[in-house]
Amino acid sequence: MAQRVMGKPENSQEGPMGFQLMKAVFEGVSMKKRIAMFSTLAAVLFAAAVGVSQTTPVAAASRGKVGIIDIQTAILDCAEGKKAFSDLQAKFKPRQEQIREDQQSVLKLQNQLQTQAATLSGSEQRRLTRELQEKETMLKREEDDAQTDFTYDRQDVVRRIGRKMVQVIGQYAQQHGFSLVIDASTVPVYYAAHGLNITGAIVAAYDAKYPPQSASATPPAAPTSASKSATDKPKP
Image 1 (cartoon, rainbow, N blue to C red):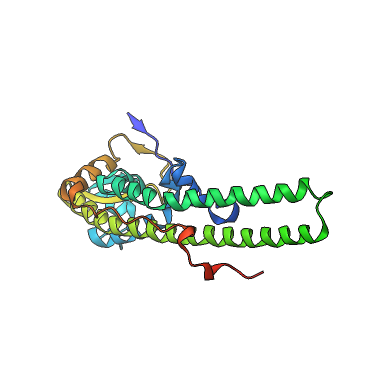
Image 2: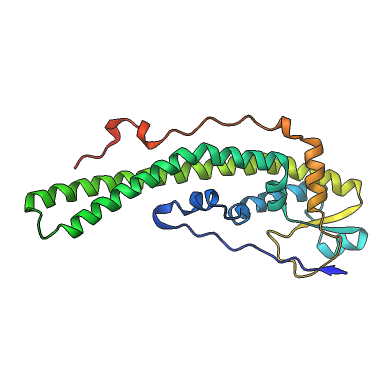
């Protein structure tokens, strides 16, 4: 019996105002597409760990077994990864809610200017326009800051778990006679015989070596934009 393992995930696309990535996480979109760039680093580290960086796949396969792993899935499915990304979601939830509130405020002001354009005086229109511009500037800053902070924290989680994960992969490969392990999340694999995928086994090995209680403590909640100093407000 055989199974098919498809290759590289699609690149993620950011939505309006650069906040689509964080929004996707909170709305349940798979994180697999968000960490492919770090899987490449993990693959390089693993090659060094098992001593096959100078060996071709064909030569390696001729001397032993070949394994397939999806390191993105392994990072997400291990107990430490589940906890880390759950903590990350909780940390940024207040900022997400604040941004949604500010988005509604901007939309309300835009609607007021559009629907009352015929009745507003010139001075009132200018005042509301300046207010709208200030709100839009603040919203853009909030979104950009949240996106930057979220990306940094997400990358830190992937790097932290990934470094340990590749060590587990190397140890597992040596103990079970694998000459080569391929990361299917970064290298196209169009066919693999049933049983070659060792992702589940690696997750189990990782959890055994790094049980949930050894995972980092829950990070403190991220400050919302409401806590920012009034001096940050742009001048008209």
